[in-house]
Image (tube, rainbow, N blue to C red; front, side):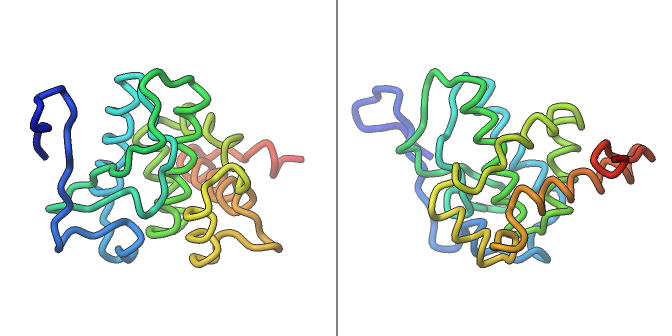
Length: 174
């Protein structure tokens, strides 16, 4: 990472040849510490009131074992709560592509807390994701005509919280 030549406050991230995008990392190569660090990176961004606007498996780079968020072309410097929740949903879906839905949900619940993680669920809408993320979800078998993303990930969320809390989800109780 370095400053621009004009020292105008802009930062540039240089991606090295041995760095890999989340799309290039298998579930076995993606440990729980990296999942947690990815959530921390997004929450640091959101703590500055910024939103990325286009999180997908190609915009998360694992460099020296640490996740970095790249490609800021759709970023907003004065984001709304909806934009930040949409970022969370996109990160959750992106992590599910590489780590699997159960691990992605568990990492979100651990990083954000169950209540904050559940606020992301209404934003898990396939149509709202960019084409790169939609394609990654289809390739990972998470999104299909028979089992849409929202069904797979919300089902994984409820199973995860049921195990952690011993409670039955309101959906299963019906």
